[in-house]
Amino acid sequence: MSIPDGNNPITIMLTNHFPFGEAGETFIETEILYNKQATLIFALTENAKKNIKIKRKTPENCKIFSISDYSLLKKVYCLVIVFLMKETWSELYLLIKQGKFRLFTIVKLLNFVWKGLCSFYFIKDTLKKEGISKNRNFIFYAYWMHIPAYAALLLSKYFTNSKIITRCHGYDLYLERSRHGYSPLRNVLSSQMDNFYPCSQNGANYLSSRYGIDESKIKVMRLGTLDHGKNTGFEDRKTLKIVSCSSVIAVKRVHLIIEAIIHITDINISWTHLGGGELLSNMQTHSHAMLTHMPNVHYTWCGAISNKDVLAFYSNNPIHAFINASESEGVPVSIMEALSFGIPVIATAVGGTPEIVESGTNGFLLPENLSAKEIATVLRQIYTMSDSDYLNLRRNARAGWDNMSNADIVYPIFYENITSL
Image (cartoon, rainbow, N blue to C red; front, side, top):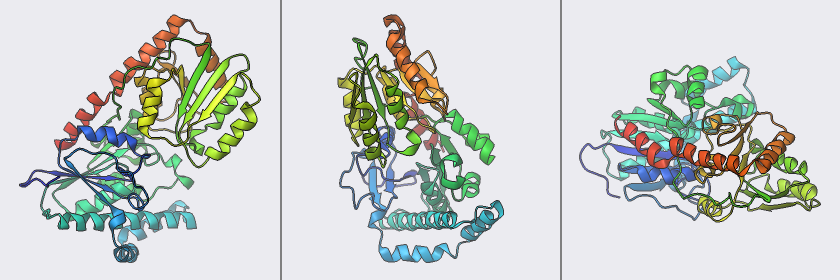
């Protein structure tokens, strides 16, 4: 990509990993297709490029950089600067005042500021090398209200002809998802960003009520998925075929799916889990101990697979229900993808999930503190419902996705909004 001449604005997009690696931020791969502006994408995670050889496709109007290319000497320099910054000491004082002054929070703060500062200097130096004037118009677009947003904030103070915006999802938004309920520099980010784009109304309400952000700065901009056609799951429910798709980590509570299946001994069940994670080995052991003695149950752990392979699985295999037992969410792209194929969804009523799943219409919502028996009850309900009722679930799943999560609708609106800045 060649940088356009003149004063046309340039979008600087700050991600964690994208476009490096098969997993992580897969939803950006769809969104970026709708971006028509000249865009420089900076992957800010240290090992984004160095340890991951896969690079996903991006449009020709995008140019890619990775902070992995930044020199060790400059990173050490940034570490020294951290201790000279007013924001560091102000936040330490706030930790003391809030009773959160602990080794963990101190280290988390210092790491946060250091990474944000490294990102700032790396992007500033890169733009200079690219011959881009400091006086150009910029939109600094942080994909997460976390370190990318802090780096964008620092950049806006240097590149004064700029706007700073951030998307807000889950871990980066809800303090309850942060260890010890602490996420650094919340007050700084919430008071100085120009626009906030949560992916759910639930997130918008949280920004307003928790951080006191002016509602005029908050705009719900939903994530979306592409249309890959419908799933062929209606034909035969003699065996109930269910799928789950998530990282195998504590917040996803995959163990509840295993324990739900234990309660069903009179229905043939085939369960597939798509996704890997730190608890995968533990869950495999758990499922082996609990399910292998059940002759009516077949289960498969696919491990970490690409989004392309997930979509291929939905296209080529009959699926009767999708399950998400998570205790916290933004608006899960995995649920959107399932709905797009016309697959009814069983999910917990957390985060923005109730905005796309309606109980009895396109799936079933369960309480946040659900039990395995409650999941089992809904699975049985899907299995025993009439063909006409089940077909309605599938039709409504597809229609709901088209209304709320169709990439062809949501992403052009998003990019029209940010380019108008």
